[in-house]
Length: 316
Image (cartoon, rainbow, N blue to C red; front, side, top):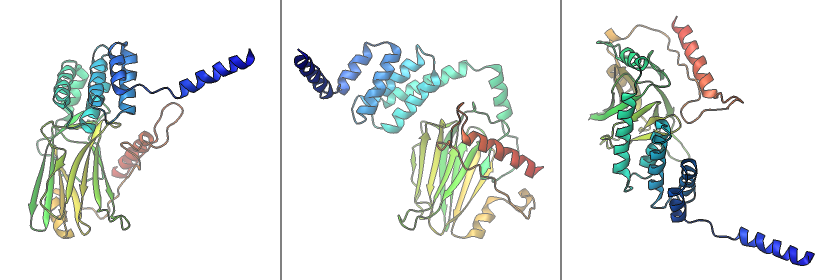
C-alpha cells in the first residue's frame, strides 16, 4: 500500500512539473473574466512571459483602463500607457493609447486644486529671464508633482557649429551628464539630459535627424521610474558643448571650436564676472536611485537634498 501511495505521489509531481504553461491567449482570456486585481496580475504575467506576443500591447492598454477605472489611479495608468508606447511603438493599440493619454490629461486638469493652480502661477518665467548654465538646475517652483511638456526639438546647423533647442511649456528642471568616448567600444561621447516629471508632445518624434557630423544622433526616451524623459545626444570626439537656459528654452551649442562655443552661450552683458565655477553633482538620479533604506528612503533623494543645500551655501 505504501509503495502504491509513493508511486501515485511521484506521478502527480512529475505531471505537475511537466505541465504546459498557460499560453498568451489563455492568460488574456482568463484576465477578461477575473476581478480587477487578478486581471492586472494575469495581464502582467502575459507581458512578462510573452513580451513578443501580439496581445502584449493589448495587455498594457487593459491594465491602464483598469487603473483608471475603477481603481482611479491615473499615475499608474499613465505609466502603463507610456510603457506601451515605448515598447510597442508600431502596435495596433497605439492610436487608442494616445487618445487615452489625452483623456487622463483632461481628467487631471479638471481635478486641479487651488494649490496646484498657485504652483503653476509661480512657475511662469519672468519677462526677461537671465540666461543660466548649470549642470544641476531646479527652478524654485519645482516639486515632485510638477509636470512639464517638451513641445519641440529644433536643430540648427551652421559651418562648424550646431545648436539643438528644446522648447518646454515652462522653465524646465533637469540634470546633465557627459559619458566620455569609449576607447575600447569606439562609442562616441554622450551628452544626457535627465528631465524628471516630464513628457514630450505627441507630435514630437523620438528620433531627431541632424545633418551634422558634430551631432550624429539625438534621441528622446521616456524614463518610467522617474516619470520623465531623457534627451541623449551623440557628439563628435573633438566637439565642445555648452548648455544655455533662457526661460522655457534649453539651447545646447556644439562646435569643434571651444572659444566659439563659449561666445554663443552668453553675451558679456548677461554674464556675471566670476573667476571660479563650482559644479555640485549629487551622483545619483533618474533610474539610478542608489541604496534604499528600511523605510524606503532612496539614496538619490538624500544626495540631491545635500547637494541643493551645499549649492545654496556656496551662492550665499
